[in-house]
Image 1 (tube, rainbow, N blue to C red):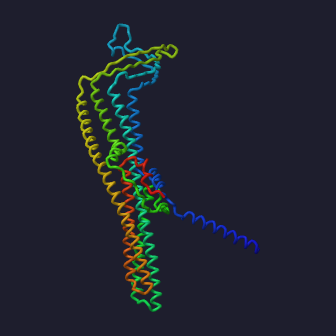
Image 2: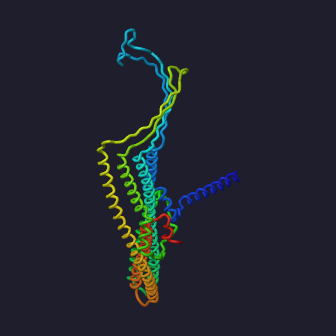
Length: 445
């Protein structure tokens, strides 16, 4: 009896330990790297999924346009039982019945049609082929935009995490200052004002910490939502915010390279080529079309009497008057002008994007250096103020002031580093080929 009780208790403890371990594993946060966040975002983002369906749609259009140039073959078979009113066909002779039949008829036949010369269909197929390539470029542009968006969200999370960490360090320092002031007050070498001042500073820093932690959690919610994860999934950023210098390319060579790499710019160029092909197809509407068609099969009054019959014929078809051609030409000309204006505007936009990204990259790199120096100086000031207060040379006003200076210096450094990282991402987007070259612009841990 006693052994059974001990055995049950031991079994229960093992089960509870297993459940506790499983819950701990479930609740442990998922460590998410920037590369993994980008991969998940590309798989789940709606704009990428929609762009992919657009590619499939344009490919289907290309296949349909090509079908107009390929042979068309169909089979047909029928059997019927009918009678005929000869008088309705103008046949009326003495002794001939007015209605003949019923009689049967069986026909089994294969029909084939092939276009020989059809410039309009050929140009429409070429236009659809170029437009399908434009769709692929739009799809790549959608992926590049998602990469830029996900990287920015991850960067926001990194900056929020850095602010929360800095706030936590200030709370730790303020708590140490409070304890020191209290000990010195208990020893009779500090005033109650010093203790109260330290308490106020600690309370303020705790409030800042709570706000920073909440902001960090909100950035993780937004990041999870945009990469297709459940917003409630516990996340932890695997890569902290860090400064990564980047060599700056030459402006002119960067612009030339971007015009050959930006998928949005190349897509517009492809759309213009497609419209040019449509314009040629419009001109070809007045050209004659040549084709050949035929059929072969069996025809008879009964299945046993079916005999092989067939026909082959060539046709020439041309339009004498078609008012619709002028309206279509006007539509295509307007689209061409619109695309030309879009290409010119995007050319200027690419130039501006690259110049702004390079300016921001240079400026933020200098800001990081200045902010780093300011942070180091603020830390030294705090250390000296703490030593002076601990030695009884002064009250803790200097320490509180130094803590505030350090908080501003830390915020300046976080802002400078995150701005520099954002400038790297902007340059990656402006240069084009973001998916292929994004690794050169990310933090290398």
